[in-house]
Length: 393
Ligand SMILES: *Cc1c(COP(=O)(O)O)cnc(C)c1O
Image 1: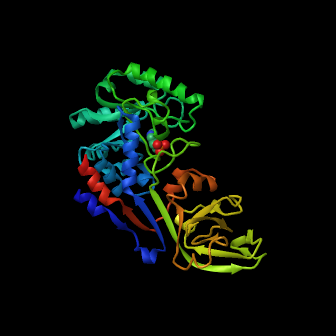
Image 2: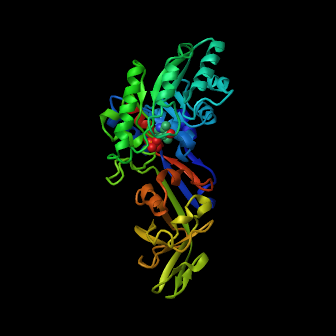
């Protein structure tokens, strides 16, 4: 637990001079993992932790997940795997989803990373390296069942299954595939992919299988197999769009009010004068902009005035264009004096869901999180419950 204690707390510039604060609730990540694990049981629950844990910071997030009981992790790049290996205990299982990079088998082996092999030549390279290395090295086989992104096609897999020399050189620890439309439960591709995956499984009996991402866990027990790989739901994204979010908010982004100003009716706000006050108005300018990962597409003219921030206990509309370092809120309807220089405004968090903010900006929660900039004071909270939650187990 000392490793967690050392990593938690603040990263980046101190709050007082950063102007905006990103708080990552590690206890919420742990609770989300427990909820997903309970939902997927008896399958094991792993974690997709690629992309710096979806932008939230792989070090603290990985340690929190490990403390909660997570033992299997998925990254995209071998480089991410090497970084994660330096963070987690040796027993952690780390799969690299981008497969085996050419000529890099030795790196994977030295960091104890398991490539999710996507093609026959990768399988051959991994098996050949294992022969030189002196033992069959663990790996996953990634089969493409319809997303047409990465993986063996069903035909290509048949080719591998006929290549007994290569097969014998592999320690196959996982058979996996990835869903294209799991966030649309009624999409016909879900069942077609599942049937294709189950047919492949039948040809490789005795190898553990992994199919579901976050939303896949909610498609039913037929989709959870032996190991699930949630990502976005751990970080607070809603795995069941259109229904109440069963996950806790994890990322809380608060920017500081730099100045308030009074406008006469008819005056405009920001570049391009895209928003015009229809009445005498009061505006709060806050210190967060597209440099901080607030999408410029959140601007009032683009989001049709739908975008909001939470300030002084109320939702207020975003007005005018989001600029590099700042943006404006219409606080006319708040009591005078309730918003002053230094007041915090929540852009995402318990009151403004990441899915909602992403929708206003014309994107998805994944992109919103992974684009959060490095200019925030980053706080990692929930350490107390991290420790007591661990002890209670
Ligand atoms: C990113 C990823 C996941 C996690 O997906 P979420 O939708 O974030 O739960 C799982 N599997 C693969 C192959 C991925 O690339």
